Image: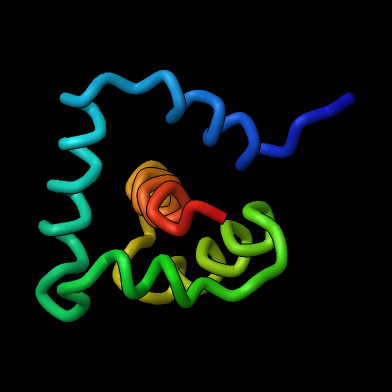
Length: 86
């Protein structure tokens, strides 16, 4: 069985310490919260049937929406996918 990149990211995130999770929150606040104050609202409205669908759509969008750095994008995506709980 081959895991998608986003499944690997989700698995890694499940092992994160509270300090790293807090850093993800801080990155969202620094990069996104000026215009998108409620991360939970963004997470609840992610498009796609699966986490991989949501992550792929969000990645494509963020490439043109103030997140051209892949690592920043991956962190924000993982953070929002984690909040979505779906």
